[in-house]
Length: 349
Image (cartoon, rainbow, N blue to C red; front, top):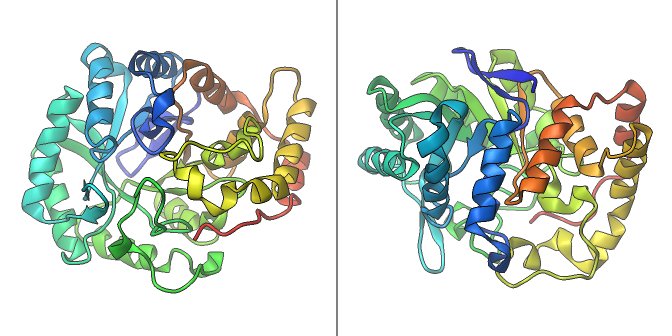
């Protein structure tokens, strides 16, 4: 698989990674199978999708424990990225960026992951009660202590503070006011990045980027490109919509984040079908076996040399299909056709 670099240190990872959250969190619990998820991780590593993206809050904790089962055998094959900064309660999630907590959380993640070093430690959400420089400084101390290799920031953006059915984000973190235009969507994140860069270098920024949610292209991705900072494209398949495998009106189980999501009502899914139709049309031009999901991922990868796609899955089949997208090269005609697709209908907020 093509390799891409993260940060000034030149850490190299596969162009397509593996988002591990669906294995333990946010999506339909009845479809989770631990052994199937373990096989999916092994398959991803076999195919060069070595960036494994997790977080201590996924589960909570069970996602890191699951990955630990694989890392115990294949640590040298993996680039481990996990996150800190959110605590899961019964009905809500709150931020905790206190330095003492960051240190304890890192040690706990290392134990669950069964490793002695985390390749990329990401600040999941800033704590509004703690200056971000203090949190970032504590994370930098972990690099100096040899427990972490590089630091990253998860960016609030188009869906950053929205409450969801699974309580992904606490209401205290919700941005005030309505959704902004793409040009100003990441203003707060960019200011925060400038602040923490003065404390310790940022190696990667993780934010949503997909065919139907391209807002990061306007300011956030250019900031990363100008500085050699890796851009980890979260939700590059639009929570599964861009795969073309979801049926409008089929519905979701109550514990699935999409069950109460504005873009996943039957009406909005039907309205946004032209996007999937366009991706499928491009896929057919590239030959039998090429899927809309692979076109969507290839589009993400075409947005910059430091972009790494992080599609999430818990199934071996989809992990293999996603990895295959790294070898798909979209033509100028393909990219122009994607640019002409209708904008997605339905707010994220």
